[in-house]
Image (cartoon, rainbow, N blue to C red; front, side):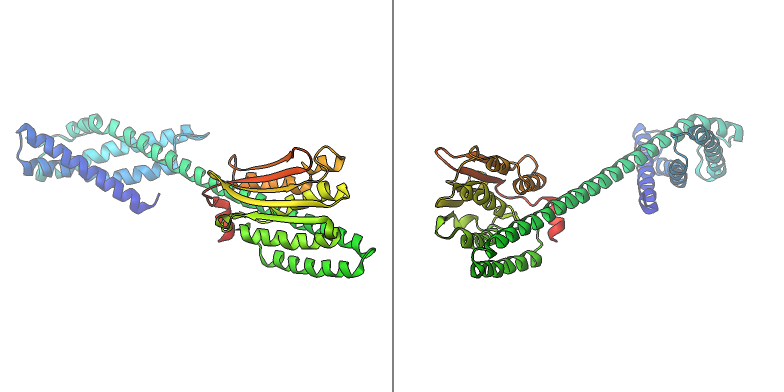
Length: 358
């Protein structure tokens, strides 16, 4: 705690004590207001530097830890010193202030100081320790919050980083397969891939507007359309009112990729991929559906429910919206699968994301 704050609190406290004491004495009718105020101020003001010194003594030697016995001995000596100093002060200023009706003996003043200041000293020791402990608790809470935020940012960055090579490797694999069948088509895929990689490198935001994420999905599907040709039909059903809602970057593309790799591609027949985005009460719902082989038709389809791409997306949204978001993959009646992401609406900025985006 800063010295100015300690001095300010000590000054305010003892001035208040003096005013309250003077008001009580004046209210009893025994003394005039001037005499009551002067005597109470004269008794209280010397406590201000003593209280400041006592607080820093408690900071230096708190009554805790393995050295508490030594600290207690120091405080005993300090208590004796305070009692004696208070007696000396009162004895010295009594001729001007007139605490006593007759000039007192120093022994009498010292006895009064023991009765009046012994408890006062240990009370202030307790108050100082309470302030110290409260300050330490606040510092620990702030440090813990900072560490938690740093950990959240690090985990989020790590999860986001794992998505980029995952997408890149899968797309390069698709290009490698196409090179042997259609070199021109592979060339077009590489051009599309180059544009997507440029966007990925230039935009490192943890969250992007839904329209930007869907634009990325469109580019990805354009690459895959080269592989599928007329066998792939993509349908879009996006409410314009939700296009500005921030969503985790690379959160929708893995859903589309999963539908193609584990649903439509193994089916070996024309298929339809449907992407919808709507507000559902207090949630944004983005759904990617396919009419492919379904979840239980092949081992690969089952793996898609917990594969790298979807598992990473699920971990990211759980980090961003703990307990308030969901990624679900379910079988559709008849054929195909349905993957959907639910995000809270209205969307709150998570603290760690706000720090990353700033």
